Length: 457
Image (cartoon, rainbow, N blue to C red; front, top):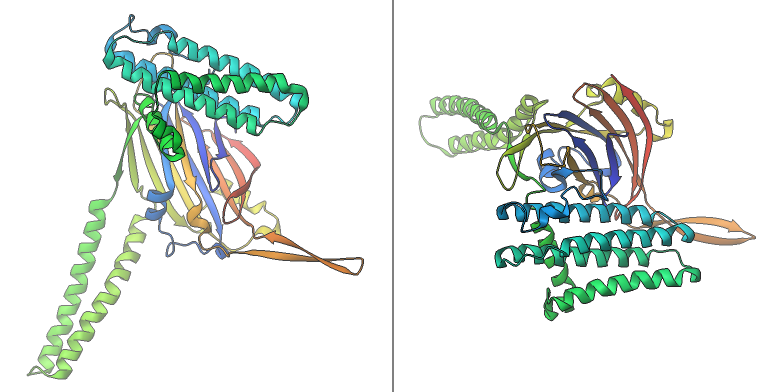
């Protein structure tokens, strides 16, 4: 799927990325097939719990020109342009460097051949060094602006060092490339010494891995100001929910009052029997009120959107985009035909009883144009699968085998499989449908396999 990507994020999470144009409108549907043995249902994991704790939405300016920062170096010069724009331009430049570095490091880590890995790593180091020099060429003299520069410079220097150390720790082992390894190590040492010379971080912070990491996370959020959009989440149907609860309560209370009046006519005095009957009536009311309300509300809410997220620019507060979200358990008969066909292509032994969870996102871009140099915004949705594995069985099994009259045993882990069908619909109503097979255990996603893709108008 060239317009949308589903990739693993962390141990037990994956993310979906796609780009949006000005005045664009796109729809994303994800259908989760959760085997019954995982113990997931509307009773054990409600839609509201999963949305608020395990789904994260992220929207920011985006460009695929990763190696040519769109905010040219003159834009981060204090002498050109308005000073009020300095922080925004600096953040755009810094964010672009970080995005380029993350992308290239991930691509380089996939290279297993030493002959290709080390030359690629050297090129990446030289490109990164040139971008940092361009940033540091315009150090502002104004104290108010200098604080913004130091925060960005400190974070980028630390992030560059961490990225290349990670790259070297996973590099193919070879004695033929000792000079290349020395070049990369020296590059990391120079960045570390640069931060020390500028006294960006205190020794107490440097000595505590948790403190330095948390500080850099804060600086990362600071350079995202003006680039990553602010979001405000609103729950929909709140007043409808209150109306349903009030109506159900009124009906039940009316029925209870009828029963109480009938009981009062049968008992001329207050007796133990009369008090007992009243207790039973009010007890039944409390037992069934919540169940009846929940059943009625689920029927009324079926098919209705549950949340709306408004994205706005963090500087001028203008609205950039609006995202409407659905999330609900559905039945097999509610599946779209093209999605049902993909599920039917599974092998017979994989067609086990499962719960279906449907996620839908409709995103509409309100802005008619973006910042200069940016033609797209990137919508990214993170799905954490931790709530899906908390009911899984612990421990490992044993596989026994017989070799030359000797019994051997091997430890095998329990693995589970989630089928996810992704359906993407663009502004012209063109659809892409693809099924993914996610294999996981209690601690991590082992593999995400894309199985089939279909396109339709």
